[in-house]
Amino acid sequence: MLSFELDTLFAGIADPDMDSMRILSETAMRFPDALSFSSGAPHDGNHDLAGLTFYLDRYIKHLRDKGLPEQRISRLLFQYGAVNGFIQDDVALMLKQDEGIDVAPDAIMITHGFQEAALVALRGLFAAPDDVLLAVSPAYVGIRGAARMLGIPVHSVTEGPDGPDPEEVAAQARAVRAGGRRPVALYLVPDFSNPSGSVLPLAARKRLLEVAAEEDLVILEDNPYGLFARDGESSPTLKSLDTERRVVYLGSFAKSAFPGARLGYLVADQEVTDADGVTRTLAATLSKAKAMFSVGSSSLSQAVVGGYLVEHNHDLRTPTRELAAVYQERLRAILAVLAEHFPPEDDHGVSWNTPRGGFFLTLRVPFVADLAQMERSARDYKVSWAPMSMFHLDGGGEREIRLGFSNLAPDAIREGVARLARFIKDTLRDTPEGQV
Ligand SMILES: Cc1ncc(COP(=O)(O)O)c(C=O)c1O
Image (cartoon, rainbow, N blue to C red; front, top):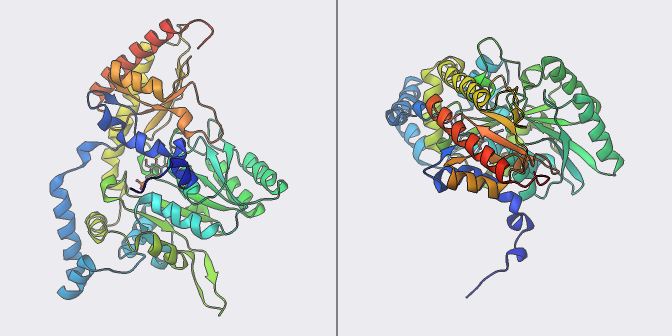
C-alpha cells in the first residue's frame, strides 16, 4: 500500500501553522456545546433559505429583461463559461456606488472567495524566488497560507493601534531590499482588520499610497469589513484614492452576502503589455492563473449574488446597514460585559482594545493563551476563542486572545464572556506565581 511520511510532502502541508484556517473554521463544530468566539462567522439571522432561490430567479429574470435568449441563459448557468466570470458588470456598478471605485468590468475577475483572489494575485505578481510579500502583522491567516502554499516569502510590518505606520512600511521595504531581495507588494486590511479590528486613518491611507509609489510596491487591499462601519464613519478605500493604479483590490461576498457562496473578486486595472504590444488589464491577464486554479467560479453562486446585487440596485450599503447595526450592537455588548467582569479599577491584568466596528477584538490576559488553553476553555468552560499568536507572522501575541463576536447575539455574548471570565480567573488562580 502506498503511504507517505508527512515530511516528504510539500513543506507547507507539514507546517502546523497551515492548520490555522481549518482550526478557526471548525472549532465551533468540534465543540458544539461551547459558545464560540473563535471565528468571524457572519450573523446567521441574515441567512434565509428562501433567499437562495429568490435571488437566483431574480438574476434569471434580469437576464431575460436584458433580452438574453433562453438558450444563452441556460448555457450561462449550466455550462463551462468565461474564466473571469459573468457578473463583473454588476460588481463594477456596485463598486462605483458603494466604494467610489471606478473600474471597467474587464478590470474585475470573479473568484472563489477572497482566498482565490489572493492566490491569483500572488501567483501573477511574484515572479522570482527572492520576491517578498510585506504583510501587516498580526495578519489574516488566509494571506499567510496563500503565500506559504505558493512558496512566497513573507516579511512582516508590525501594526500599531491604528494599523501600519506608512513610514514603517517604507523602512521594511528598504530592509528587504538591503537584504538583496525585492519587496513586491504589501498586504493589509485597512478597515476593521482581522484580527486586531484596527482602522487605518485617512492621512495614513494617503501617505501609504505615496510610500507605495516611492518604494515601487503594489498594495493588496483586502476589504471584507468596510461596509460594517457606524453610520457616517466609513473611510474611503485605498483603491478609491488610487490615482496611480498601485492597488489591487481583493473583495469578498462572505460577509456582505454569505460565506458558503465562496464568492469574491479581484480588481486589477493595471495595464499589461505583451511582446506583440497588445495591452490588457492585469485582471484579464491573470485569468490564466485563475483558469488553472479553478477553471471558473461557480455559476450558481454568481447568479445568486448577481441577483442580490440587481435586486438592491447594485447598492450593498443600504441592505447592509441593518446588518452593520447588528454587529455594532454586539460590539457594544461585548465591551460592556467585559467591563463588568474586569472592572478597570481592579488589578486582574486583563485588558482589551476598543475597535470602532468589525467582527473582532483583542483581549490581553496575564498567561499564555495557546491552542491547548483554548481547547481546555472550550471543553471545560464551554467557551471557545482564538489564540492571537496564530495571526502573528514572527511570534508574538502569546498572551492575547482574539474574540470574534459577530455570530453571537447579545445574550449569548453575556453568557460567553461570563464563562470566559471564569476560565481566566481559574487559570490565574491555578497558574503558579512567576509562570504566567
Ligand atoms: C481579512 C479577511 N479577508 C477575507 C475574508 C473572506 O475570505 P473568503 O472570501 O475567502 O471567505 C475574511 C474572512 O474571515 C477575512 O477575515
